[in-house]
Image (cartoon, rainbow, N blue to C red; front, side, top):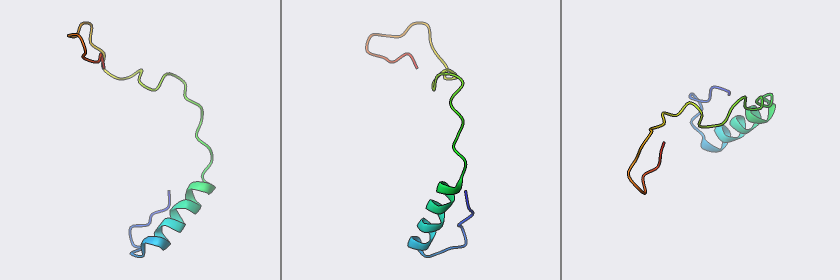
Amino acid sequence: MANTKSITDTLERKKIKRAARKAAPPKAARTGARGENKAKIKKAARGTSKR
């Protein structure tokens, strides 16, 4: 994304960021599941999530 640190005007900064986002090439499709690299645990108490 464009470097907008030097721009102090919020609306101007937003405009530049939006334009940069639009111009950026689309991201590639995911190769695996979103959370596949998260640490998983074998056993947990009831009501506790496994990740």
